[in-house]
Length: 349
Image (cartoon, rainbow, N blue to C red; front, top):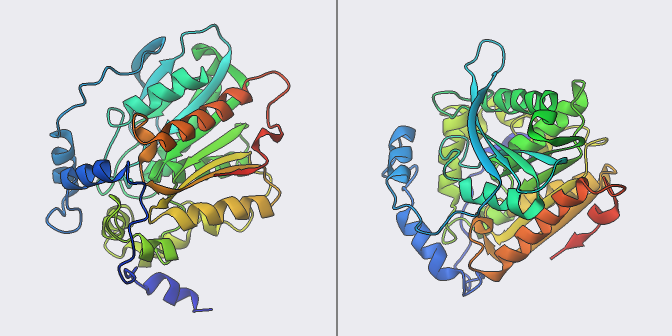
């Protein structure tokens, strides 16, 4: 095995060209997304410029999924930090219901409440759950550990005020996609280690779990599938500073949850991975590590899908399958007698 230092120093290098492994139904969408996405780390190096370019993209003309109500508000941030904007989505059904604290993706440096509004609405509607979407501080203006501190502060606030949103106090869930998946995994561990709150389920959607960038999936999926290895290098530099994955902070479990020394006693997990995603292997490794530590895990793996596919439930069909399974897992947390049940025990896909 290579020395630990070497593991972080190795850059992800693409393998020789191989046949396209992406679902043919998804290829036009991936090409369209790639063409409209900023060249992060190449022509675009400034995070503010990246956000401006993303905000300037044409808005979807599709009607957003309906929910019971939506409210923007601000909750207290960590000590000495500003308040945290959140968006509270309530389902159109009687309380109580599960309550999801959701952290958006975007490499800790782009995206926000609006970029993930459609996904959060589908979670709220499909699971019949309240969802509190968290607009944590972004890097590089607020580098690590600002996002972690905001995420945990938001979870604690929601737990303390859960009845205000009609939530079931025994059905608090943390969820996130990509870098938001990292924040969900970290807050679940912080809640275990620092006196709560009790988390009933962690939902990790193609999560960022290791800063090393040295897995086979990083090399296999370095380019051609929307999210690239070059994007991820740029994201890590925004979050951790110019050293990126070589920063001493990269090994900390609050940055790389896969490196936590003890995963036992964590809440059950629903882990989603995509085969055409640089992050695929670290997600699958984390699911395996959780199981080895005695944590109940339901893993869904879609070999022919790309990073971010869950946000496109019209195409391909795997998106609808993944969304239905994820919202079903959330809904089950609120069902009497089914919390933390065997529904989370297997592997799928």
